[in-house]
Image (cartoon, rainbow, N blue to C red):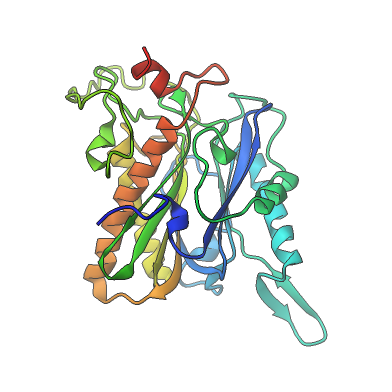
Length: 332
């Protein structure tokens, strides 16, 4: 197995990504759009999540497909960005049809999750519906910009600058798995003693482009783990996409398994200071057989998610008083 041509979530056919970046106020919005809609699942595992339309994705509920997923800064205020994406989709008549022949409307289904970035840039300027609309205007396939862009503009990860990262992996039989992550964890993605990246062992084809040779990992020190928290409000949010044909329940299972990627990439993971949320989009082009194949996709999704999180850290640069990993460990 190897990454797709862009090593990005857009390697899944039909998936597009759009960013809107506010560098002045260090916040932004990222939109992930499946061109023909997608079956979706979600797993909310953080203790302080900020979400929209996640109950709708419960397998027992009505709507099968979503039109987009929104990831935004701004804490709970940033959920407003999804309204702008809805407006953009409505203008293109993409959504869930309601009404009858004489009275017909379209309701775009746009789940969303947010990170807390209010203390990095401006606490008063948050992503709005206009930010979401402009992010949707920037939707495209192909290469995905990473680092201090979109939802990653104000991200901080383990006390360092975080950002947006993405990765992919092609599986036998034509299944493609991709992920896009806002690296914004309370825990570190690197060993505080040696500086080694925890998830370096997952690297594909030298993708991380680290200058230093692999270093040993030190044993965790639990004594002062939360004595001086790096920050009190963090969240890893992201989206896994695949071209496999999944039910809503199966998409939810992939989202659950993808959370293992956070634990592989950062320590500690899923703390009381994190609001971790992972969506799964399944576009349905490739049939899969049985629970073993579903589990294999979930295992790959976890590794791809971890690699995407590492890319978010490694593509970041120092801004807003936060130092970047490469500046500290690669340029010193």
